[in-house]
Amino acid sequence: MKRTLTQLADGRELFYYDRQDGADRGAVDERELPPRPQASELRYDPLTEEWIAIAGHRQGRTFMPPADECPLCPSAPGRRSEIPASSYEVVVFENRFPSFSTRLGEHGPAGGLSEVRPAAGRCEVVCFTSDHGSSFSRLSPEQVELVMEAWIDRTTELSAIPGVEQVFCFENRGAEIGITLTHPHGQIYAYPYVTPRTKLTLAAAGRHHARTGRNLFADVLAAEREAGVRVVAANEHWTAFVPAAARWPYEVHVYPHRRVPDLAGLDAAERAAFGPLYTEVLRRLDGLFGVPMPYVAAWHQAPVRTGRELAYAHLELFSIRRSADKLKYLAGSESAMGAFVNDVLPEEAARRLREVITE
Image (tube, one colour):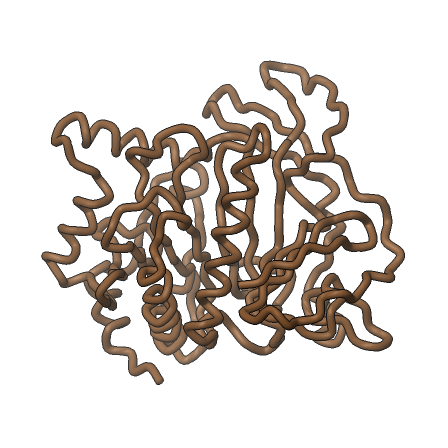
């Protein structure tokens, strides 16, 4: 893999990732861009002991432009985008409208009991392909490997930023999920704290280890592989299954068979084996109702400094679509109390996904 670093017109960093060394990445961003915003602010909620990012500048971010104005497509004569080159394989660049940033400013007190501090960190955009009309499910195994190399490279570098505590690679797909750009892409957040979900799962893993001496995630994977009823797909290095207590109508977790704390711990064989299995799962989701499935795909990696001996890198994929013409809305119980009610039996969801005929 070849990585090339360049800068956009406002000083943001952009990285090209190429399989071959010969790609010309000398194109210059000639746009006139406004100054970059300062970091958002973090406000502490004493009732939940969670940090909330307040990012007012994101209200003005680009929203669903037509295809010929897509900022994630390669640049062309008369149309300059976020990517200066006329073609690319995989690109990562700093988000123009970040929730977290290293450009720290001054933030006054919020009043009350809420502590306020800068939302230090970084947000990046990952373009999976230059093909505007494609999707992750259509990427070749080689392209998925290149995306994974980009995830690993960025996780390693972002983890080294002072104050960053956790790196999160993810994809939002579909208008129903709330995307603002339709080009196949994901994001990476470098948080200045350990996220609430990770705190919960690592605390559970710690209690499990104290009771049994074993890793909780490894035991969950082993139990699902043995039961088999919720397994959707598997190969030598990975298993995809619907969790027994799935929160979402269609939810699939993808685990490597060997425990590693983060993506960088995967060996060459494991990295190569991920793409064929994962894209199969995505095609099964798309084939379930005959329409593109909206989803969130979330990589769970160990925090930078804590819980690494308990963590188990894996991907959690879920959709809010519960039938061809119905969505799962987070209403009173889920939104107000955090208490989920799932309308689809996990075993039935797994069976339906297994029965989808994929190309």
